[in-house]
Image 1 (cartoon, rainbow, N blue to C red):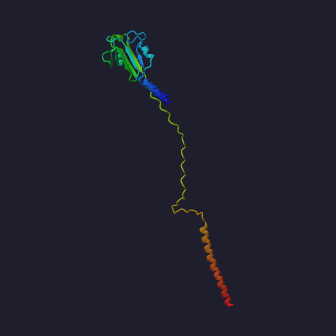
Image 2: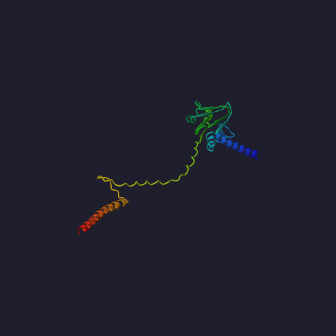
Image 3: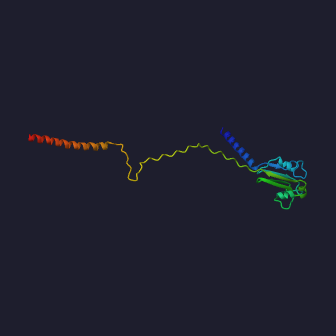
Length: 203
């Protein structure tokens, strides 16, 4: 049971690696199909290029008779003038491949300027590499801003002196009033008592 699971896992890994390797290598296109790189193809090279889509890492294959023809990668101006004097690259082995390493236009002409004038030339536009879309940002709920706490109220300070703070405890005031009344009562009681004693002695 374990051996079959290991085999299935290994097979899956190999399939994924093969798929990714195929994506990195791209596709291989045969210029002119069965006709190859000739002066009079059954389908014009411009039409053949228009019905295909080329991407970075794709390969283009030229088949021609070695020694009698070649393929030149040239600039735009040399392409339209069929100039073979300053090629960017020359392919001469009869079975030539070229890998597109960037996006944009590529210009190919025959190494024979007369063949180029007869239409043996090709423009291929490689599509731009599209960047992968970024993953969406995680959703975070917006919390309302907390309202500022009101400042603690403090008694207003008068320019003439400190503010008076009303007292919530009246016990101290009532205690002072009771002590004063008691002192006055004792004095009056003592005076009355002395008057009664003197009156008794005189009578």
